[in-house]
Image (cartoon, rainbow, N blue to C red):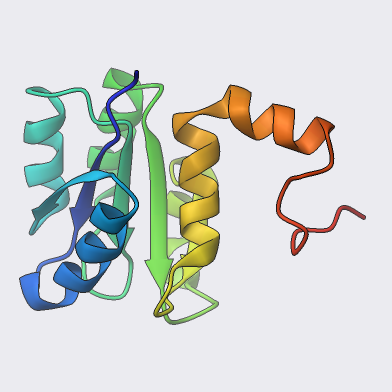
Amino acid sequence: MVERAVIVVDPYKNHSGVLCSVLENEDYETLSVGSLSDARANLETKNYRAVIIDLDRALLDNRLLKEIRHRHPSICLVGLSSRSFHPELEEALTRYIDACFVKSAEYDDLLYWLRAVFDPSTHKSRENDGSGDPSLERS
């Protein structure tokens, strides 16, 4: 089985603790770090499949995101934000970050995305048999 290891980037541990608890309740192994450079260092030591970045608090460096994307092409980079628009992050959001979700208490959309990242075959079979998430309608 693939390790379900996720890095959460947020400079404030008290904020990232809630998200880590939600993820751990869903059987993800979490590591909370204070910066993107800390995440990069940890990516070298263990096979993490996703990095979740708090876009409201973490400082983003496009050069560092580009390096992470180049060295770890299969990593899933996810943003979380309470805002729906980040004009200052246009390059990061269009080139490096795979998905961005609104912060919520349950993180349902994020959890659904992570299930697809960690086990895409299960996700595809559920889509094909019609038992996928009914809240995500296709147009």
